[in-house]
Structures are given as C-alpha cells and as structure tokens.
Length: 248
Length: 288
Figure 1 (tube, each protein chain N blue to C red):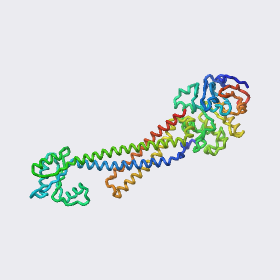
Figure 2 (figure 1 turned 60 degrees about the vertical axis):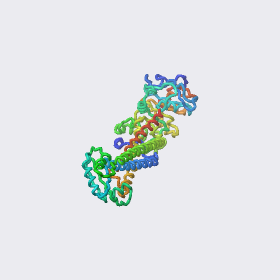
Figure 3 (figure 1 turned 180 degrees about the vertical axis):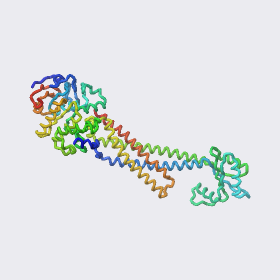
Figure 4 (figure 1 turned 180 degrees about the horizontal axis):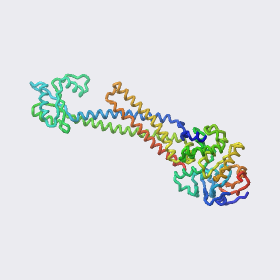
C-alpha cells in the first residue's frame, strides 16, 4: 500500500474512470468544533462508477466530508462541484433536486416509523414527485434485493438492526441515485449482516453507481480493495488501490 | 406484491399527531369564541343603532301644550294642520294621551308612565330628501301662536352615529387584537410543531424534499387544526348567542346576525397558513 500526497483525480479514481467527475473538491476546508482537527485543503474527485473508502480516526472529519458530498453542509473554504455544478451556485430547489440523485446510507438517519417498510423505501421517488404506480416496481425490486421482500408492510420498528441497515440502503438506492454515500454502514452489525451490507454496496458499484464508504475500520477498508481516501489530522491522502478485495 | 403495494396510497408523510398541540387548539378555540361572539354583538348592535338612526333621521317630535281656553288636544290638532302644510313634511301624526305618556316615559327613562297632563306629542315624518330642522318647523307654529318644543332628532342621530363609529372602531381594534393573538399563538404552535418534528424535517430535507413540499405539509397540518378548533369556538359562540336570544335576554340579536361569527374561521385559517409558511421557511433557511 503506497501513500501519496496528491489525492485521486478522475483518471485515478478507479477502473471505470471518466473525464467528468460526479464530485470534485478543490482545497476544501470544513469548519467543525475543533478547526485543527477538521478537514482542510482537501482536494479529490470521484469518477462515475468509482468505489472509494473514506478512512480516518473517529471524529476526524469523515462524516463532515460526506455531509458536504450530500449537500447537507457548505464548506468554510474551497470549491465543491457536484454533477458539474458549483454547490454555491445552486438554488435551494436545485439543491433539493440534486439531493434526490445522492443516496445516503447514514445509520443515524431515522425512518418514518408511522410508514411501512415499502413507504420508507419509496420516500425519495415520492419526494421527487413520482407516482406510486411508477416507482412501486423499483422499490419492491430493491427491497427484494436487500432481503426485505417479505417485510413490505411491516413497520421499521419491527426490523432487526441488520434489516434496518438494509432498509437504509434500499431507501438510498430506490430512486437509482448516481452517488451512494455510506457512513459506517457496518457499525453495530453482526459479521453476517455487515458482510451482507458490504456486498450490497459492492453490487451497486459494479452496477455503475459511484460509492463512497466511510469507515473507521482499517481492516474493512483494506478488505474492500478500493482506493482509500484517508483523513489524518485534517489532511487527506490517497492510499492507492485497487487491491484484491471483495470488489475485485 | 408490487401490484398490491402500488394499489394502496402511501401513508401520510407527516405522522398523525405527536406535536401535542392541545394547548394551542384550546387557545385557537377560545380566540374564535371571543371573535365570533364579538362579531355577533357588533352586528346586532350596529344594525339596531343604524335602524334607529334611520328611523329618527327623517322625522321630528313636536310637543305642544294647551294654552288658555284651548285644550291640549285642540292645540295638537291645530299644530298638526299647520305642520302638514310645511314644505318637506310628509305626514303628521298626533299621539293620544296614552301614547304620549308612554313615549315621554321612555324618553325620561321612567318605568311607569305618568300622566302627561296637557302635553301632547306629534310625530312628524319628512319627505325622503327633506332637510327640515327644528327652527323650520317652529317658525309657522310661532306665527300661528302655538307654543311648541321641537326635537328634530339631530342630536339623537348624531349620538347614534357617533356611537356606531365608536363601536366600529372598537370592534376593529378588538379584531386586530384577536388577529395578533392568533398570529402569536400560531407562531408558537408552528415552533412547537417544528421542534417536535425536527428529525422528520431534517430527514425529508436530506432526502431531497423541496422547501415548498415541507411548508405545504406543515401548513396543511396546522391549518386543519386551526380550522377545527376555530370552528368549535365559533359554534360555541353561535350556540351561546342563540340561547341568549331564545331566552329573551337579548331580543336585539336577529337570526341573520349569527352569520357574522363563522367568517372568523376563514380569517384564522388564512392567518395560520401565512404564519406557518413564514415560520417554516425561516426554519428551512437555516438548513443548507
């Protein structure tokens, strides 16, 4: 494993590199509680269909990077382009529409417990204004894919931790997003469920979706065999991939 | 399975209940009760005052007294004849002693009418565009040697008009106060609703809900609550006014005065919708 000071460019991003990155960070700094620990001067680009793991110590800014990628925060400094648009130039309506193209597998994101598993998984297409007749097939297919095909009418509160994580993935991908961001998607899961979640993310990447997986687990990052964006004391470096892993 | 899922409508995005809005609903109900009761009172009071002012405005009351050998009735008949010939007078009606006694008693606020003695009253009606005054009526009477006290009702009608204007201003002030109270309660209710639903709001925002959709959901929820509680408050005011009228405690309330109450519901709902839109937008503006 080699360490470079220059982070990934579109051409280095992965096996399916593309000249037009879906996301590009240029000298981005984030203002967090302890500014010295927050990411600063971060530059990288994500090619369409690439898979990256984002590693670093807990509290090192991984979640902050994901929030920036999901348009959930604005950088203190620097420039971010998502789908070729500078995030500062987006209107609120454009930001909302863009968020519908970004799947978020954030375990801390709640479900609407008064809605069924099907309705929760279909939230993004519903918010995008699609009719239930239009998206029901996609949602059912995604729920079957994540192993919840028989739980459509159950409430999320009745699911196990692993099933809830699977539902998070289903909700994130039901609208066929171009980027999927996963923040510690295997945390608190038993090994079997964790393996299942990683397999689902890998399948997404193989299907052409850009995936960023943030984890504090270096072993897990190594097992992925994908380029690693490593945050250390606010600086980001690229640990080259690909290596043999489950993506290979 | 797909068909079955697609056949049923998705559940509501905003969870039913959960905001604990009962205190706010009671407040909206109370405000609506006061507003509707006030509207009914103003409608009936205003209508009664304007009716009376209209009746008094085109008429005068003349009091004559028998003098010397001429009886009060004879003087009244002579005065009526004189006044009938005055240009602008449509009709002169001589009140008999009983009617005179009753009217005098009402004018001096006496419960039991006393004998008016040799005083007789004449009710003079003017033609529609007549501008006759007490002076114009007294002149021909004086010429004919009839001593009379004339009230052309100008003082009474001006007092009634002033009272009606004051009633209007007072009720407008009260309505503004009630609107401000509704605004404040609605603002607090929206804050409570958004505080309770903050994780819901953040989730929908993160998943790509537009500001307009979130505002619409919160606004619809609050408007429905305000409509229900205001309708209850206005209905209670209507029932109270009806009971008041049926019991004979306030015969001035006409049945059509009761329709003055319900429009408050619409005003409260509209105001709540505006407050909800502004407050929710302000909260959403804090998100990126």
